[in-house]
Length: 73
Image (cartoon, rainbow, N blue to C red):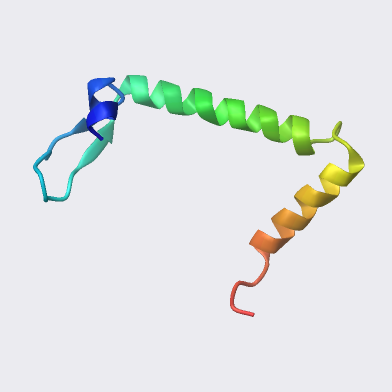
């Protein structure tokens, strides 16, 4: 957390050794997180989207089905 706070990406309002922290994302941190989400979405689309290799699309469908299925079975 110290590195993220020093970089201006988060605020740790209760930074004390051994205590729970209340972490807040800063506007710069939120912008970086949004950019990361966009980058991951772009990779996901290239690997598994409509223009991807049919086998890769099948892999994506199988992964989605595994995570959407009933976890109690």
